[in-house]
Amino acid sequence: MESQSVKRRAGEMKDGGAEGPTKRTHPAPSLPTDASLYVGSFPFYRRPSELGHFSLDAERRYHGDSRALRYFAPPPIHTSAPDFDLREGYPERYRPRNEEIREGLDHLLRWLLEHRGQLEGGPGWLAGAVVTWRGHLTKLLTTPYERQEGWQLAASRFLGTLYLSEVETPAARAQRLARPPFLRELMYMGYKFEQYMCADTPGGSPDPSGEVNTNVEFCSVLQSQLGTHHLLFSGEMDCTDPKAPSTQPPACYVELKTSKEMHSPGQWRSFYRHKLLKWWAQSFLPGVPRVVAGFRDPAGAVRSLKTFPTMKMFELIRNDREGWNPSVCMNFCAAFLSFVQNTVTQDDPRLVYLFSWEPSGPVTVSVHYDAPYAFLPTWYVDAVTQDFPSPPKTS
Image 1 (cartoon, rainbow, N blue to C red):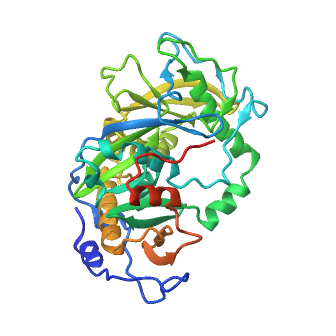
Image 2: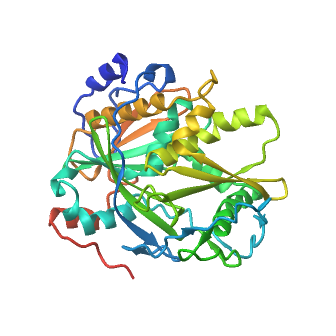
Image 3: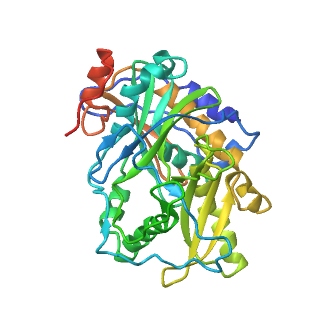
């Protein structure tokens, strides 16, 4: 439920443009993020349905199929402790994605060009809908409880559709470039865990001897609705479970995570307050029913596996006064989407409204034209404008 102050602020938005390449200088409204403002009943959220999927290969090339999909293949239940060495193969068999390449929404837009005529409700459904990545929505859900990392989201309206794409903040870029070796190794461990838990074919066995290549992704494209906001978003899926009670996506997908071992009630409490919030947000949005986590020791060996059903995660934190509340997360996300819809009034793919947030502050807005913030590629704008059904060919 949006607070009255939030609704009032959103209603105060005025039609504003940009003068040339510079940002707007007159005062812009803002959106508060205090968790207390968003306490209330859980908003309407339509059960996500999968519209389709696509894959990115070892060279980060787009394919409109499921070639990158992997299959959940956990060790036998009776195994006392998994024999997973998460450091094995590092760094000689590690091929991380080039993070200097900012992809924006490009891969999702390629899928959309191929399939927009097949959308439920037809292409007209897109007018007024929000198109974005699942990860961007995850950041919105966790914002009322985030105390360390800010974010920036660029928004443009084109033929009625609202597109949201993350912009790397200066602080995030500096942190990425100065990432210490132990953090790079921790990132590898997460991907290595997936290698131990997944097979390339249903009923197959994992092969952890290969290269860990983070260019490879299988992405689901989903449709949902939060309050009055129609959503089309995509996110990477770690694997599908051939033995799941329902083989219909997204109910068949499994999210895989790693964390350090917990040895005290205080450590578990901190885990529930912080890490579990992000796991819940990431899995709840696309309707992934469970997270399977591997808990590692200081040497990087997985000592235990634990399954966290997404719909039961909140029960682990419900009685903690300093814990998080799913209703607050979803109400803030709904309020932010209303704020954006009321702010981004001009339909122009070259006009960008930049929404910025730093912990303990409100969401603010600035308006820009063209570089460096414009993110809708020319090939997409031209194809949609000409009603061209296919994206450009990739080499």
